[in-house]
Length: 154
Image (cartoon, rainbow, N blue to C red; front, side):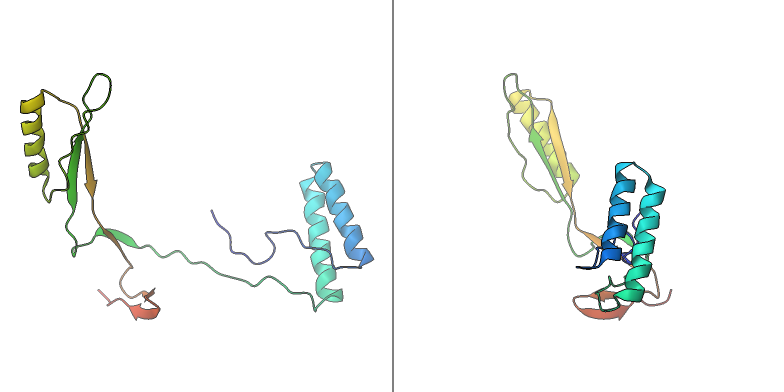
């Protein structure tokens, strides 16, 4: 599970020249060496509180919020799927003969039948390839090619 980066997922860095920050960093390291995660977290919290009060000019991590959007993965209707096979029969090494990309699985099966008839090879590795499209749920605005678009309500 991922968490948003609000600056609390990483330990704070001591401000240069600050004895309080240096002391709290030392407490954190001592706790870490003792495997005392509670004391380590306490030192981080105290250092963040101190830095907010005493070092407001120090840059802070920005908050980012990631929201889950339940996209659906569908086959791209604009592109034809491809089917292929390669003969992997052979005693010492594979035959390696290939059907090439075909537009239908029946074409690949026919190639296999002919290759088996000619060579008596019976073992093949079949592959299937297609293009997929991520579709957002209805009514959700998504960014496509730099522009925001909203899907129609269903």
